[in-house]
Length: 319
Length: 274
Image (spheres, rainbow over the protein chains, first blue to last red):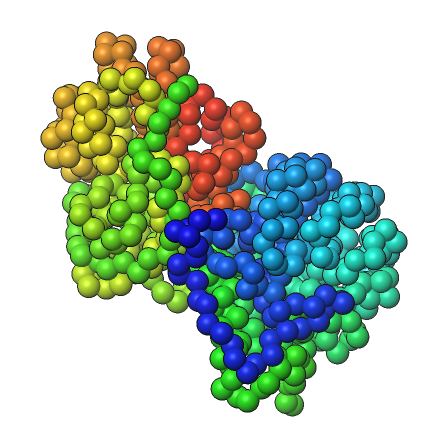
């Protein structure tokens, strides 16, 4: 990247005195702020705005064994304080992903967590097996929670047995840290979290989007071509926070919090509720520098309140 | 096809932009002038900016708008008040500061050796064609314009097109300006009689498709600017995909301008509402 194209608008302050590093599933991260899957592509699209090496980690767009076309358009709808999406995990498949994205990511000095999707347990396993040979991969995040595909995705994440089965099967083929991303579209998210923990997950991330819907009354048609989609953004933050709090007390592996985080204070709420790290998702669409603002906000909070290490915030909720 | 863009690609940036003017210029259409020195310096014809129409979580997503033209350190945006976002945009006053990302997208391309271009604008489709008309004329390319609108009150950018084009022909649904009927009647006539080297189209998708088919029948190269609902604007979210002969492409970075022959016109796309 030439000098001219270096991010001119990203915030680049030092966070003197505050230890922002965290450890998740054996991964040492320079800070707890990750870019959430599906909102950051493979990072390259944000390199004009963000110094990627300042991120705790990048979680890639979901990667499948074969290329997936995704859903018909319209794929998004804006809703009150949020948005619905039904992208449908469009991706070029693990072959092209490795060739085109991983090589570039390897030179970016940021831990790369690959989000893995599949129609079947075998497909999840095959994707991970393909990626085992790629040195640029720091960890995997199993996506068993996407509400926008007919087979696979959320089908694995809404009952304990399939969630455990896919986790156990992938666990068997990798020693790398294994994160499982959970769906909020369940009666009791804690029991799913316990099931994947027992099956070998090193950490859980939550929440993925909440299943929702919007209608255009003028046309009397759904606003999404697929009728239903996943709700994200500030609208879902209270739900996400409650679930992180519940899961953090139900499992002993680290919890990565996600859902409507727009500011540093939002992120601190998740840490206090029991998260060890956070993912910033929809905010990247609104402001491509959102991850940096969240990071700086966390550091400022720590400085202002005398917190010397950000990991001291995890679960420090006063009740 | 051997093509050249207007300038070398500029990296997009976030810029705080100041509203200089925001006024009604046609029925239901506003002209927003934003002081944005950095975007204005780099934008090419056909590119767009991604604007936050208001702050706060109520208008969470940005809205994409074509840059109509550049005037000094300002960019001009034509917008139609269609939904809550554009209604909100119409409320912005001079001296207010907004947040823009740009320049985004690929812009129009000029085939090597092109001497005569036909621009076909349907309604607000005139927006991304203004700067193109100006720059083609500066390069010595003869510009013809076929422009359509529902009525005379809803025609936009007339002065600009009249000042740089050697021929402007108008069609309105009610006959209140130009001939009565669709712009596709005008474009068909101009493609057949004038034999342009390239056709540039922007407007409702059904119209763009009809013009693309006219150009294909006459073996004239044709580019279309397509509109989609968009979230990020930078290529990450995959909201704005266009189905093409080589798979689904992103309107925000692979477009908004596409070669007409690569577009799969499936007709499933409903008009986006901002």
